[in-house]
Length: 366
Image (tube, rainbow, N blue to C red):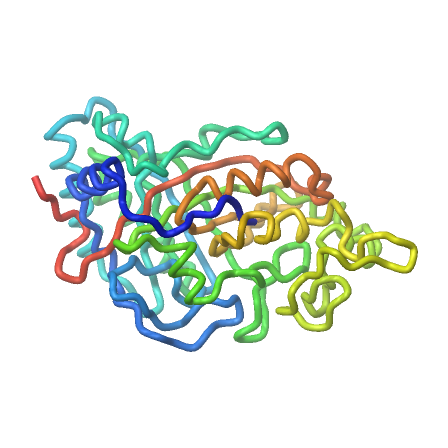
């Protein structure tokens, strides 16, 4: 899923103010990484790091098998300088918590947090608008502080999530939490979702991520959606109909009419009967980056399974401008063939602060 182009441009006065405001809240160090060139993973991102700016981990890293996503709200009545000091203290404590190997912690600030402090938010940080097909539960979305924990040990992640909540007691209150996983797959292959299709094939390359995912200061934006999937209903479709809904072959992940997973989708190809090879309402067509001037988001989703009546996708995507998601989802909500089998149940957005090797998460300028 992709959206509006976020062309690199000089910072505006408002963006500089917002960045300063964010730094006044927290200058992130969240296990910072200095990006260097590295081999590409199956999902098209790099396993190393490459830009000169520091970036939080858990975005461009190889994707571990498990995730815990949590949201916290500022405690009622905690505002002003005392609130900022308390938040700084919590984030310092979070930084000090030991992380196991191949475990990442990514922190983002929601738009409501800025409003509570009466501060200017980063100019691209806005609540995701409601879409006609949404069936959102407000108690399972939103949040002042969003945290994505990823790793290969699910018990360790759950323990870490509890530690985060304990160390934040009195300052942040838990709003919601979700646990996700990647279905079994051969190493280095693109993950599959619960429909059995590869998910993340169109993720940007390292160079494309520098353009479309990361800002020059090492920040980015996170869009979260909890998407319930009618797995049984989708599996009841014939294989050919499933592939027409998605726009890709289930086995190879290749676009319809192509041979290999990473072949470019030909949106203009037609059959001898004059029909599009990739149907007009196929998910791949409506989400294609060509419709957004090439702009891409980096998808890092995880499946969830709470039984037959509640299973689906924890959609987690990073981008330079959340308006990208809004534009794509507007198209999908209108005419995606997959709408018969998915329902968006929760939504959140956050500003992923830049990391700094020389500062702990929670360092405050004022």
